[in-house]
Image 1 (cartoon, rainbow, N blue to C red):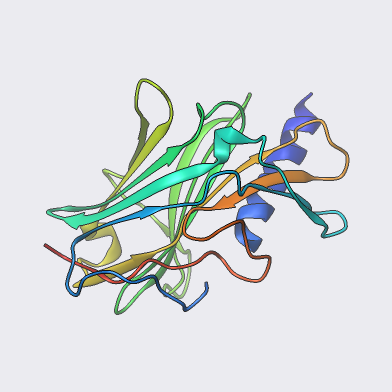
Image 2: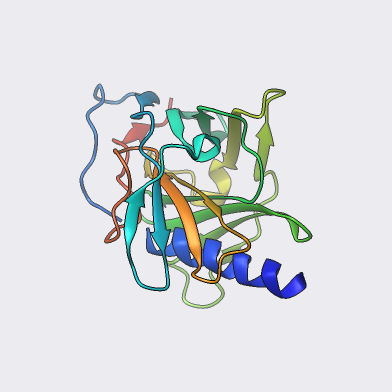
Length: 204
């Protein structure tokens, strides 16, 4: 069972790492808060073994319906709502861009492996991991809303931010490294980018 879990963790991590695009969605100038309603039923099944993709609308637990970004006060807050309860293995990846930094936010929940949330800063010359006190991921009672709070001090207190968000789950018992993914800011996913980016959210 441990080997199955380790294989699933590797598949989920690789999936979110392969799934940034420079295109941004429209928003009012200087907005600090932004909401996007994602298409329903656009989850994609991906085989990391052979690269094939097929629609998987039945995977409602990672089917994002709405995402809200709020760049206000001391935090960048990202809220993700899904069609159904977020059950089973779960991974979320967000690329975060600021005027001076390129970062990756990763959070995961795996059976027998627990929970992990981490922030990586690719502008650092050595260890990219950011020791970020206050970085947190929570769920509401229905487990259909996930909230991630990133302290602005951990990303350089920027004037503005842009972010992406991809939600994923994994088939733990597949020999073909099967994942199910939804880019929260576009229909389906792209195999060639880390996810579509939000507009600039200026600090408010």
